[in-house]
Image (cartoon, rainbow, N blue to C red; front, side):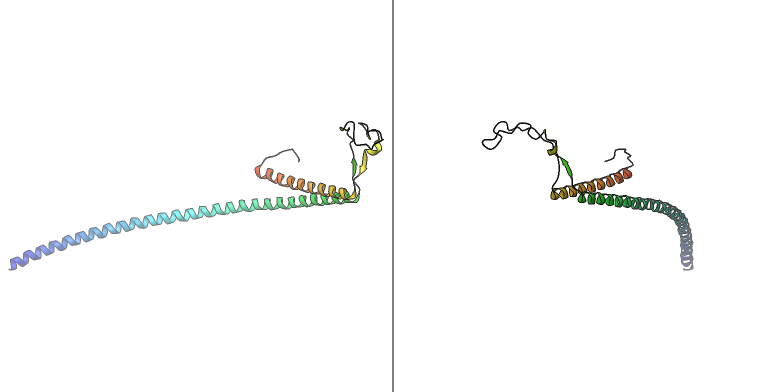
Length: 184
């Protein structure tokens, strides 16, 4: 039986030695994997720090560019507001001037196309084809006050629309970079 125990002890010892070798190999294998993973993690962390640094620089540069562009836009807006305000004041001044004075109009006489039987009363001669065109006193006149007021309001409205168009047009050309010498 001692022989049997000695052989079992030999097998147990061989199994323990094999187990020690396997455990040593697996420990070394996992340690090398952990070292490689740690090295990869450190490389990734360095890359992330570098990317964060580059992103911060880019953000600062873009923020500066944005602030500069916004400041230029604000200056342009203030200048445009001043220009628009002076244009509005000039239009209001001209509109007030139109309200204070009568509007002179020139009446262009035209030839009559009615022919004979132009509606003259019975017993009176028919109107001639050029009636009134030879009388220069009838070719100029003043509009009635109501018509003058309405004409002044329409002119003021047209000038306001024209000024708004010119303002928007210049802004559009500034945005697109198009230059033109054509003025509305």
